[in-house]
Length: 428
Image (cartoon, rainbow, N blue to C red; front, top):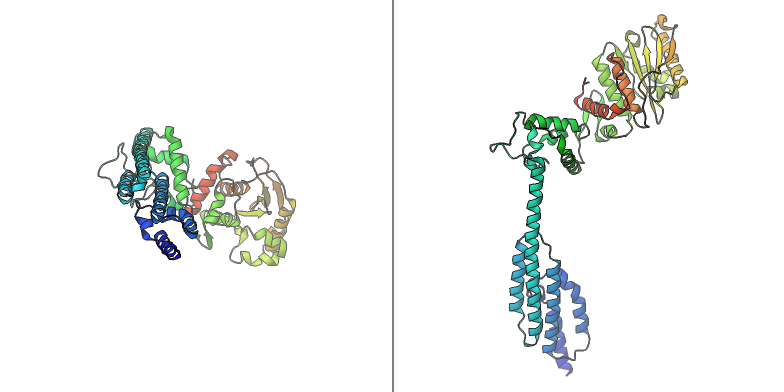
């Protein structure tokens, strides 16, 4: 009796770890089998008192239960899944042929048939929903969904996509670049892209007004931006370098950093090189901490007194202001977008100019200096656009343009500054 039990034990263990359990019953996955393997091993570990036929019956019952679980958890992704369910039904019925298991086989056949019908109906419904969604998208745009903005890269106007045109997709997955791909390549992100730019490009290409489809366009732009977050875009101009972290300060309500201020000031100075000199944003801080000797070499190659206008950005930790020096009438002016007047900053600049005049042997600039606070200027209405106002002040003063901007114009001004930095030139 003990010898017979030992034989049954070995056969039971062999059956439990056999590949037949993994592939023989309908091809169900090993993952589902391993979930029930611990139960089988626990049963086989006890003293076996039933016959070999009964144990075989219990194992087949457990295999049917696992097969049911597999069919219930199978994802409904394609029509091929329904054929798999039919193959599983035929495989299971051919594999399980026991006299005492007819009841379970018949019940499982009914269950599998119901599951197969459910699979087929679900696949049909999913196909119908997909086609309905596609037709709805087409009806909402009146043009193919994958050619709305991508075909905008072609400059020839047309109202319908041509069959001879190469396939172009909105998200840039095709080899042919789309409109958003061009923006990303040129600017490194979609920050300077405005809704007006997109609608204008679409109107030029398709000769149609897309203003009533803004939600669709905004959704596509958002999806494209989510797929292209990382970028190694950089800008080099003279001794300046901007990366995406620097350019990101121009997005939304972010505070502008020193790198953006200094490079934009370099663009302003190069636009009118004989008239304007733009000081680095670290100039005033260096002057305060180390005195004149700390900034003496900053104007080694520049004669400040031959310029017409000096632009000095002042960065006081959490706020940007601007000091200007008009050398023709010796007036030092202070510009602040919050109406604040830092008198000590103006006094520091006045003392610097007097010392510089003595060092450069320019006695005519040792007297006659006046200070002024400019009040009737555009003011900010938030706590984040002070740097943008300073750059706008600088540009208008350097190019002798009136201050025709306000807080409502700041989103547009941010986008324009972004473009100017990327293209290394000032725009109108």
